[in-house]
Image (tube, rainbow, N blue to C red; front, side):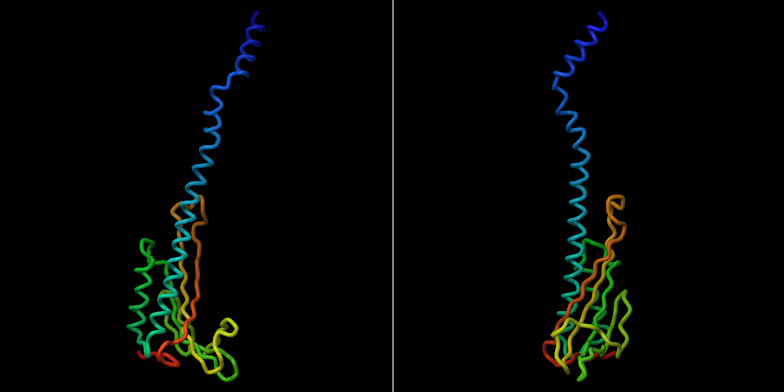
Length: 181
């Protein structure tokens, strides 16, 4: 009798589908929640990367509009980067602006360079720029920005992701922007 009761109990449980939805939800819910938070974190990182790229473009644009530029003016322009990065912290942002000129031999050299959180390039050092960007005797402004994005959910993402952007613009009103101290 006990074996028969056990058999009928198993037969009834096998045919009972009332708890299937709850079990499926219990199995899928953690995965779906992880996807949701992962996507939200990816969007935050992408937004930080886009803002850092905008900083590089904005610094190049502001410098390229000048005839001459001083260290104080560059420091003020670099401060704009911190404002653009909001709501992300500005401390991990590193910036550098350099004036480059291609000489008659086709070698691109640094005229002047200044950085904020990033070392300036040595005056006279050579730089590789994309082909066809400037001709011999021409000048351009190169800005570089890096940002160390620290994910608030370090257990899901790498703790630090470094974004970097280089931007090139020609001076707008003069052939070469001079640096005054």
